[in-house]
Length: 514
Image (cartoon, rainbow, N blue to C red; front, top):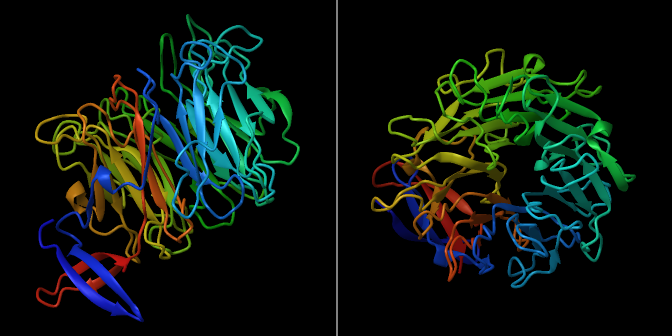
């Protein structure tokens, strides 16, 4: 850990251990898998437990964030029908055993229930609700129209019976391949929902493929069954290529309030979008307003875009959802971070994450790319694939949002696919100096080849101590069986900034009360 040192400081009546490192020269604090406070596994071959995780919801409103873990390949009554486990938070973090197990409401072989999970307070009752995607659900049109199921939270938490269901209306639409909370976009007290449908057929030609992202506004009347045709707003991709597609809608996320107008914005990504380079990827932002988002969205009417600008860079990253927003410099405007995991910055597939800071003008009049950005981090090693996944959290409980970035390809001693997750802390100057991943403030590596630690990540305060905790998965982790998958939780903690009086350098210090 370089110049790291242990210092003791008396703060009030508490003795605090400070683990310090130069802020700009080396990773501030290393963790190992042994430092996790919780883990979950299911020893079934090819489970891929943890391909989706969520730790942002409090389903029983007890003050502790709860964890949902999905396994789309779990055999629940049929081959790869899927399953989701829920763990309620407590003083000790997530429950040691599942608080609730949710099986597919409809048993479809290869239905992939649990492909995506998300939490949102859709009915505005202060109990978060659980959204689960099942992209290969067979509905009335025939095959793989897909569906999303909503389970309402309550004082006693969730139960295993869904309350609202939205289905696709076209063959192979795969509705529910991605689902996300959009936050309360229209300030009506209800969280809103984004749903992705990759391969929704809506253009002419042999085997047409085009994609949609749907917005449903929250309401206390979301019960029963509906279809994507009833969405309150949608955006549609514009690259319809036989047997190929841009994956528009496979990446979704709330963009926060980038322009500070009091209304939430949304982002939809297309990681295989061609904008001069094949499969470079592109993300599209629409700013919210008092009147919503206007006419249905398409790439030409987005308010701002960014593109990967390198063949096969895959900006936004399919299935890992490498987009997020937070106020990293606490200036009142949310900022946008986007991962580009296969970008070749200094080495092949070292990957990068890019930030654009919000302002009264949003993200500005000039669209983004790997050169036009406000901050970047890139993998220190070839094949790091930094930017596989990005999540915003408040690791140290201060007023600045922080960012958690995964790199599933990270090699250790020339062994690939170990994986890594890193945190950069927000400050009044943003996320600090840009540069390689060794500039991160906190990091943890996996411990197994080709397990892809950092594949799916989320953060929430599972022990209600004021610091967000990290839930990180390695879905290809081997137990006694191959590719069973595993998930870990790591605690957030307070950090302070002090000066190294010997060198004059700033130090970032992790502290724990003894």
